[in-house]
Image (cartoon, rainbow, N blue to C red; front, side, top):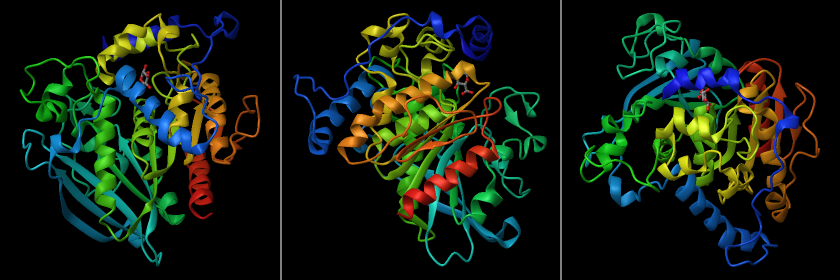
Length: 417
Ligand code: GCU
């Protein structure tokens, strides 16, 4: 039903804690055969693969095996050594699948700090508006792909316009990130497929299927979040070949639906040493068993294409789902994970986002890693945590420089240890 339906539901949702029915979270540490997991080794060997498979089966669908997509081609199409007033080098990299030309490929934009004297830690995240929306540099090529209609952002007839340049730049403070000695790699999520129910027919998922768009996606097949996440993982493949980046220090980041994508990427691909969820909400960090803000019923009606088909069966039926989102956070262990909420973003259920991290702590403890250090949601603008961190900031659903200040500190703390 799309964006308008979701927006209309925002006014009707429950925002009253006292109206949340009691629930029990699935046990993180008990295997399918009933064994209690009490060591890091048992988690890694037994329970982690089980939980990953549950998320594939019930939530996001299974990412096809590498043999499905075959060779991945990286072509560096531009290197600009004096980007951002000389402070950074900007590269564009075209990533494509020579064996699947029906998929048009993706344009990665990479900024690395100049004069660092060593390979930089790198944030990797998708954008909503394209590279030209992330950067304010006028020579960034305008994306020609399908975009969600948005007059305010100067998206006209589903296309970016000159006026849409920089419209996402407040969410990507490139100068600040570069000044902190970090790199950024990003791509437009619509390079993978357009974000609407039929988008898959024109994107990667159809290009990789045996009969193109002829067969509908079935239970267990990957949804759009899985496909967007695949894009982030191919960026990691490229970064492993780029000597300006330290590919052992990658942080995956995303906001909202792309925050859900970031979490699923961190769960599947352990090359990301830091995982960041910005206001990911329902279908992301928020506990699905809490009826607060967006619900499973709403998200799977509005955006069924984000998930595998099976997920829809948990509408108003969350208790029968074998996972909840503390298990998604736990899949990041023992790597570092940051969950961020915004106080006015009640639709995303800030407390539910907090609780998933709190309830993932027993897994991090198996590795001797500490979580939040508090049991209650902290005060506004008061970050907490060690290997699992959390804040709820002043303001609305967005990514702000306050958020980035915390992420930069977090990434440095974890990678400089
Ligand atoms: C809608 C949707 C959310 C999503 C958000 C976004 O509000 O209901 O689940 O996170 O869009 O991606 O902006």
